[in-house]
Image (cartoon, rainbow, N blue to C red; front, side):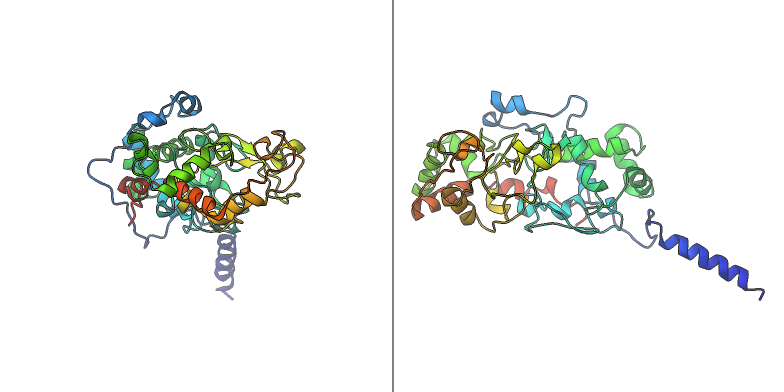
Length: 368
């Protein structure tokens, strides 16, 4: 009987440990980011055509958190590090892959506790805009970058647990010191570094951007016709996807359903007039970012064009850009594009792919 008490203690301790999330790392785990001796330059400004007055109005980079090479480098490591999740399996980059313009190619994304309720959004040029996520629930990028980490489906951490965990990882002390002057790890600094890296992911090297400099002499006949269709008012594409960033900072109901299981912004704020309203994403790199819409229902650009051309659903709050009378809730448009016009429009959309951004090493996984 003299061994009964120690065995009982061990059983109790083992039981307690199994109910507690593991914060520290297994000492046998070894990884380290492979970073250049001299940090990459993350401060490259946009070219002139992406510095218009309209886009400057939407520029949300705060004076308190400008992009620095040291801060964005730390943000890059954080972005790709699976240690930011509760079980060391999911990173920000798990749902935002560079080769897919920082989406993941799935209808819904895999997290530590199941799958997400909405499609993973593309990441580029996110300094244009003040509110984030499909329903605009995040008020600024510094707030947004911490929310997936704390989401119990996506990454499952708390901020105090994250700070304690990163404090045990050898490579972070030097990175935080380079970015902020000392090695203290706080959630506020994590937020600032991640936001700097995400803001540095800039898309401006597409065939379309090159065409602006040569009057689109580099475009095929199909691409030119698609460009005309995009802008001529018939399709109304550019009424929602505005400026040279091809986006809108707001939300619209784009006629996907008559009844919405996911009400988007309407569910967030309880306003029925915003039922089915979701963020209008940039069309830059749209060729790579399927499946499309907040619920990933469309697998291809052909399906997307078919929806807008012929399959808009009547809804009391459908956006006025998509109605025959130009009023919210009006009769849905029927654009009546020919098969060739649909292909031309897709050809134009594919000129927005920025292969330079997709392959730029400074945005790549530093753990590879």
